[in-house]
Image 1 (cartoon, rainbow, N blue to C red):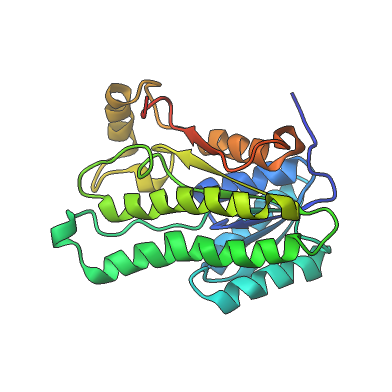
Image 2 (cartoon, rainbow, N blue to C red):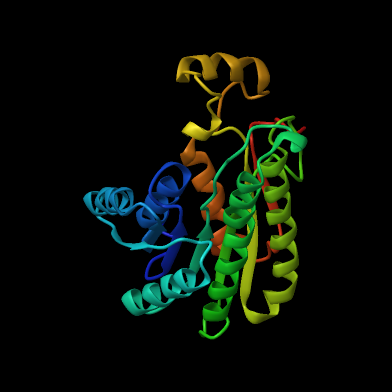
Length: 255
């Protein structure tokens, strides 16, 4: 069923140059939103904008590093200057580093993961809420967490899991603090998705498919479109009473 839940609204998506972020941007545009995609790779962002525009939507790209407060503040300001408001924000930018047990983890990898996955979400929330609570219509924010962290652990990726567990906690706390400001905050926690991040070192897509057929109750990875649909639900008026939720989209892996 075709829907049009975001006409005239502005949606900001960090990490919008590829994968889940690109799918989210395309999904918002398909339902009437004006989309701002942000990230560090301008070429990738421009590709996303081109895809949106070829599908008949409206989008703009803005280069920003979410670990830098000035970049994030400038991103929010640019979105408002371009389209007049910030109605939805999706904090999707994230990295994976390390892949080793805690005792063998390089400190630089730890800091990179925490700086991007956690501090980046904090800086984005601070700037986004600041804008949304100052405008008449408020807004909705969706953070992208993971089923690794608050929901399950896997040896060798503890730094990543710790960062994502903290995103879930940050989401719930901020949701309580700002719901009376007119800002709804929730998060989604995808499991292994159809992106390069879910591939093991040297693994092909076919090998991942065979592995997931054995490991996942659903029998496959989650598509980026499926994650995007969960994000759009939480950002929409359909979820007007949903506050501080952590919606797991992982094919039953944590059950």
